[in-house]
Image 1 (cartoon, protein in one colour):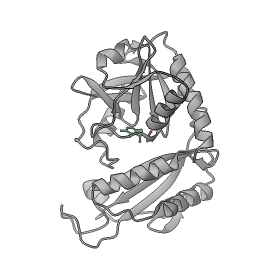
Image 2 (cartoon, helix red, strand yellow):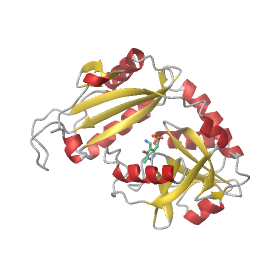
Image 3 (cartoon, rainbow, N blue to C red):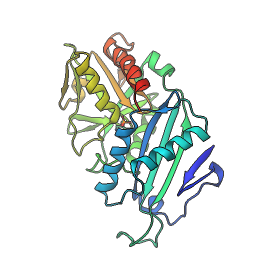
Image 4 (cartoon, helix red, strand yellow):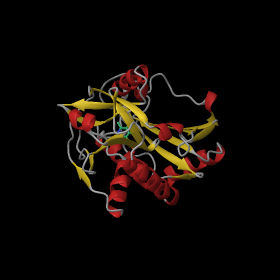
Length: 281
Ligand code: PMP
């Protein structure tokens, strides 16, 4: 596999950064993940706009204009022959003597790589995913796609140990989002609900597309807080991300939703999203 590090394309084994990198020492950096479908980036403009925003929120100058980011991503996809999978981008505040305050005139560290992965023919989407709920123990700027992911690592591990694919995180009785996804429910009345954007959650690029698709295809959708009880009582639930697209949820905390199979709204949105993703880069 070929990775990108600060302007160079290298075999992954030779791709490395300093132990003094602030990403490593302080998690002082941000990342972005976009899907590749049919060899093309999906909704990439949205991902690069979020990358720009994440950087700006933590005071790192974007090292590349959009065109250059696209060149790096496209080059990696092509060199690695990825037809379906992910492109990962990371920018940190660079390598400097360990000191909390920002270093002066230090170049950022830029790392990128691809992961081949089957997104469309994912067997989990056929059976539906189990999720658990866990307390959201993260910091208060979850709108920034920070590489500080320890809370998500712990949440996902807890889910895996419970035989679940995802953990939905809970704050003040309401779901914030999944550990690496946006959470949705469908009420028994058929209304799709997802939490409104704020500092409490990441502005999902897939979320945005799904909201637009719901509007286009006359599916009723509300952006509002929803509680753990509403999730447990929902007719359906699903989660969205660049790596899972639209993933139906069939049980929450061991409690089966509906008939225990992917629900019609989630399946419909998954299909609509495929069509959107194939056309969109
Ligand atoms: N929330 C969190 C915490 C995430 O890690 C992700 C995945 N990046 C998402 C939501 C979904 O975002 P997107 O649809 O842009 O992948």
